[in-house]
Length: 207
Image (tube, rainbow, N blue to C red; front, side, top):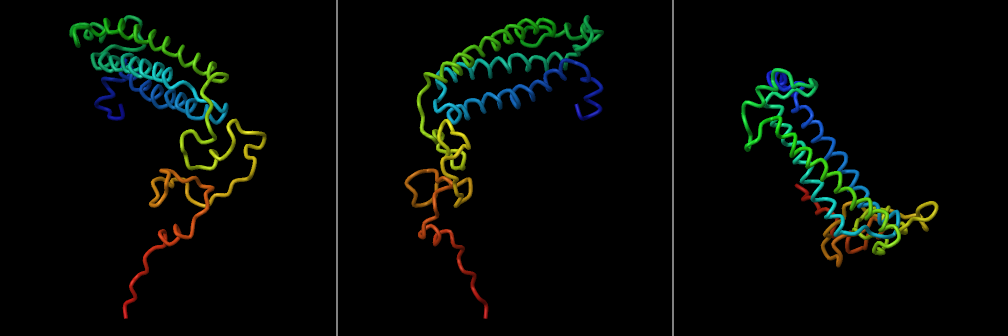
């Protein structure tokens, strides 16, 4: 749509609806869901059900694509998004079929997918509230992260930290040589042997 030659044809068609919602749904809504699953253990001390998380995720992902992907096809076929009768492009859109359906007929599977996607949010709602009291109890760092917020108790007390944490290292200390664990938290002091490994090699002195 940033190219005038394409925008002259696609402007105000269903293509605009499709491209906008492909940004809003995966980029925003899926990000919100991911944030809830990720921070839920820190806020409650319990983990949401992984099984019901998958039951929520896969129908939502599939139906999101089933809703908005056909709208690209409708838009390229000329279906206008603002006119109730579809305008002149409506007739053009119904002259050709894509996978056996005309532009107008694609509204039916789109509607089915929208209803299923709405129903797919029920497991998320039940999982959220059920897990507050009955979810699996977790430690303070269930995701084996490295940053300081995961040193706070789960759920965190007033003031977040029992003891003020000290950062001894960067936030991305994964797979360090000689470490038993695959992750090293920021509040773990740097050992003397580590310092020697981290020290850059001496540059040769040219006479």
